[in-house]
Length: 321
Image 1: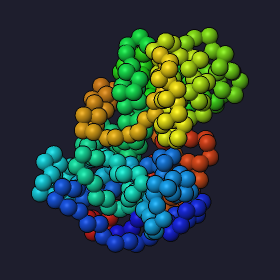
Image 2 (image 1 turned 180 degrees about the vertical axis):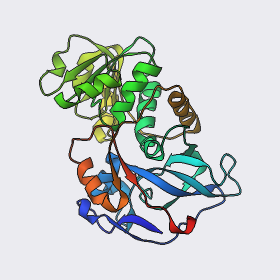
Image 3 (image 1 turned 30 degrees about the horizontal axis):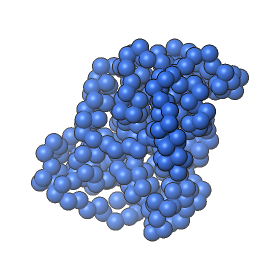
Image 4 (image 1 turned 120 degrees about the horizontal axis):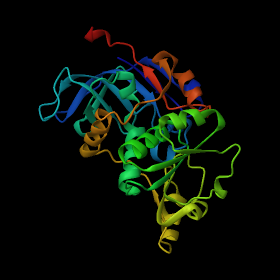
């Protein structure tokens, strides 16, 4: 089979789509023919070497985490899937492997593809949608009628967070984005939008129950000035400050600081599918690239211009024709 690999950390040009060894799966896993995958910020951060302390120095590496496709084989211990099932899922981002014609995935990292959703749309869901869902529900404890601020509201995570907060959780939503994305933010459900290029976020008149910092451009000391008593600041980028310093500081305040460390669980997949089935979540796909143009896809992902998600079409695996 073929997969996107890289032999060293570096720019998008290090990514090569080439023939690699056949995947091996265990009795607890699924072998899946990939129809589509998507680009997440963690993918290019790993490729660049930003996370080399976690991803290690062993090469070659296969990039990518989110995918959709069709089950080819199911291990004898797998209970919920069978060959022919249309699925979507997410691999461990540090190990990668989704930018490939075939993937091997643990059962708990896979869900049936929602009816009516294309393989392209489904491949864009896992990390972005589950990050938005678990941040709002588990970390923020979101409740109907609360006021949520989403900083970076038109990217992959932000575009899904707006829809969930407004349509499913019935909250009031204020989005923060650039001038060119205001119409998109409003179309997704934002009640009001702050243009960070023209407006001063820190002089906002209102206070918020949840400050969801998707773009990771603020700090807890800044954010707590905009939080209501018992409000929560949610940060998306694990670091020494976000994981240790800010939570420690928040022990001395009613306004809490939390960082999302995504752990995918079966009940999360089930709730996400319910939200989709109810019509409360649509995937915003900005651009679609063939897997042979993965270098261009990563270049665009790093441009700062992405609205929603970037999808990758994977060539059909010839042995399964």
